[in-house]
Image (cartoon, rainbow, N blue to C red; front, side, top):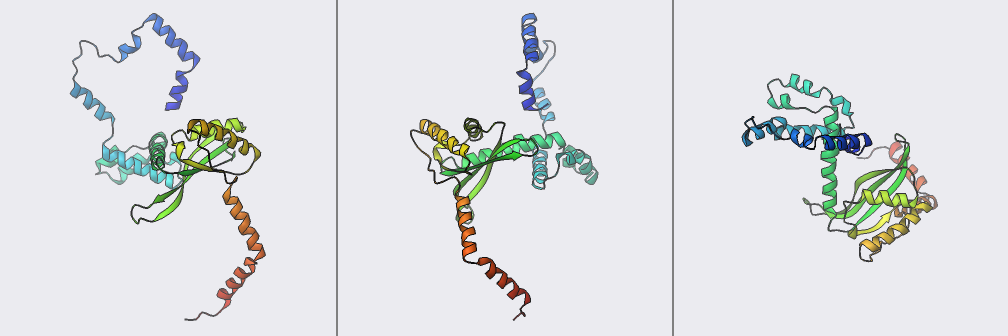
Length: 275
């Protein structure tokens, strides 16, 4: 059972009724489950040894994280890892690491979502905590979940630690799944998706141009002004990328770039090679 499933079960009416009945009948029932019997001798050393036996060694944890990264980067199915422990144990029979390695389907999903993804989002939030950035978002229909999906990306100026070169980078921040797509609903999902970011450093938005998005911008401007001491976002149009694309498309037609490119293609393809 996952974390979300436990939280959902905890809020369920059936669980709340059972908890209320347990408190009325035996108030000390649940705490007693975590209290050692008085006749059983225990020590801190014993408790620590039990905990260590349940936790994988650091080398095994590192190997599992590397394997999960490999699975995600290769777009492999988590189901493919169901018997990976037995495969590694058979391939490397003299390796203690292979024997302690365990990364089945559910564990792969948990490490990817609650470990790696959470760490990457925190690092991204930290990287823009003291620098200006632009949030880009777009909502489209998700064919799997049959509802709208809002994808959030960050674009900001950074410096390469190794080369010292300055450049602009874009990073995926997260996705929010929406039922209705009114401006008020979009604002709620946008706030949920950016709750870990320092919105004082947000300069502008980049988006497509439906009318509902402009109403969303108005609501966001009001909220941003209240939360950030009167600061306002710089709105330079719905999407600068679309404007540049249409400008290039128009120039491509006027300047007859297509004919030039075709001529160059046939020139280099059919012409004799000169050394």
